[in-house]
Amino acid sequence: MGSRMTDVKAGDLKAGDLKAVVTEHLAHARERTLRILDPLDDVDLTRQVSPLMSPLVWDLAHIGHFEELWLLRELAAAAPTDPRFDDLYDAFRHPRRERAELPILGPDAARAFVADVRARVLDRLERVDFDGDDPLLTDAFVYGMVIQHEHQHDETLLATINLMEADLTEGGAYPLPPAAQASAEEGEVQIPGGDFVMGTDTEPWAYDNERPSWRVAIAPFCIDRGPVTNARYADFVADGGYDDQRLWTDTGWGWRTEAALAHPQGWASTGDGAWSLTRFGHTDDLPADAPVEHVCWYEADAFARWDGKRLPTEAEWESAATLDAVAGIGNVWEWTASDFGPYPGFRAFPYPEYSEVFFGDEYKVLRGGSWATDPVAVRTTFRNWDYPIRRQIFSGFRCARDDR
Image 1 (cartoon, rainbow, N blue to C red):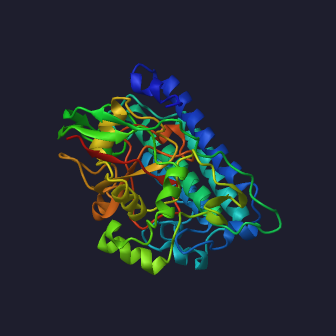
Image 2 (spheres, rainbow, N blue to C red; image 1 turned 180 degrees about the vertical axis):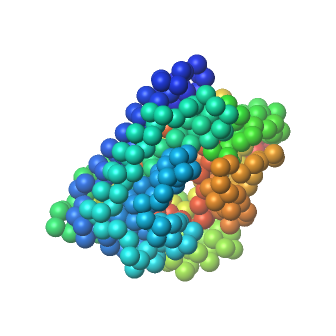
Image 3 (cartoon, helix red, strand yellow; image 1 turned 90 degrees about the horizontal axis):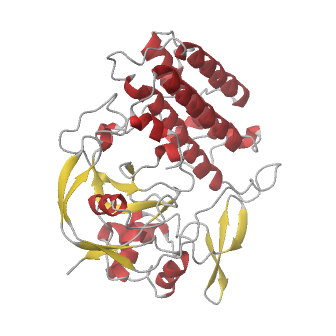
């Protein structure tokens, strides 16, 4: 998947080499975080862009606090930098809409905090023993968790910035990041079904919700070769897809009428059935062959119904991806039909707040990663999840159907 995780997976690294891999990934994640934030002034870093998102500076300090918790306080029994941070930067204690009102660190102080934590982490890394029996240190798991955590927040930073006004304060439009790539893949592929081993016992940095591997029986099905494109989704819009209540679940129709939406986030009609797309303050013609993005689960489900299909289950999605039968993975997160739940034999590790507290029918699973996801967190077993109404995330979908 484009990272050095293959070296870790091979299981033949010596401790010194493993430390080099960890150091490289830590540096890459931090460089990316600072690069994302660097074009923004202090006003943009501290303001509440949306009630759905934290102030950017909260995410920055939270990244440092999480790193300190696990790589200094857990591994080395270090004292906290500031005991108040356990409250201020705990994602469960204060909802995002309230975080701008908290006495959080300002931009300069947050940068200094994360830099100090990182310096101490690298100093401590020299003395870490990866050959012991601590499961946190097996294959440097806890370091992989912290690295992936920072990358996941980097994607959140990008989603927040994308929600800002087109003219960012005193700086003009934000530098346009990469985009989801156009796909020439059309049609669908048949998957024969049968027993399929889902999840993993071998990926060293896989999260607890990806474990353990288990055998799933899958009926034959067909799945789109590529994600649904903007052009195809525009056909759905033009055909009255947002107005046909028969295409929406009851809950989805309630969301649709309350939100009064008639197109994906960032779209604007330019007349005669054409559309523009605004992303990160830049507006251009809608790229027809690129995957549709910023649609919620209800929109994806309604499209699939309109197209005479359905969303794939996550087991179907993973089986097709494992067989390398589909294309376009990693362009946009792909909604599935599945609720987020544990695999048989699931064990929370190393803390229940990563996965276990979210299990249930309130969240839908997304698979595959997006253009904003770092390769270290892109693998066929990786499970993302969110409320089905969310569309600020970099989400799209592909369709499936029973093979009869």
